[in-house]
Length: 183
Image 1 (tube, rainbow, N blue to C red):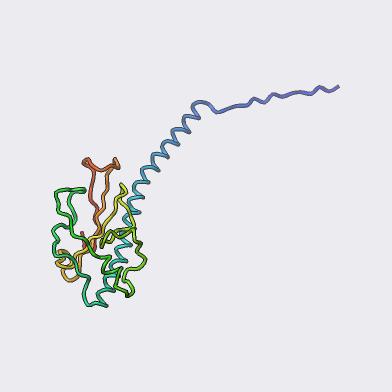
Image 2: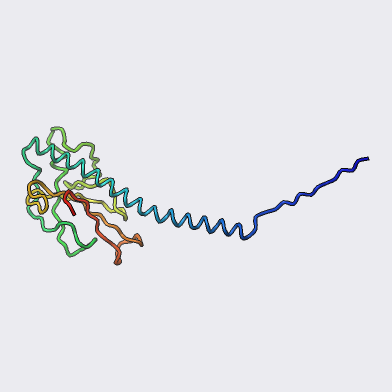
């Protein structure tokens, strides 16, 4: 008679050290990816604002070719881009009126198409991008007495970067400016 030989296979699990090594590697990868996320998000806002500026500049040139001049702006300009983000001491700039001149062209075809109503605050043209804290980003425009582009207009947008902590206030907040002049 033949005997059956039974083999016992030992089921072996992971050791505590192997599990800890995997957890440390996963933690490092998570930390790296979260650090990169903030930079990518900032570049996303900047890219969107640059493309919007190109579209607005094209609409302004179309307006000038049809009307013979750039859309008028207020003569009350006192503040160009703020030096300190959230500065309350500065007098706010007057409305940019870009929506009035570029989008609601009194029955004619608008120079700036596909602007949604929620992107307009009165006559002020707002960006489709939102700031880091969800705040609205307003385009600023001056053709009355431009400071940087003397023969045409100044167009810019200011948005905040709340720094490392991601919250307004503190010493790490900065104003970022995208404009049609060289910084």
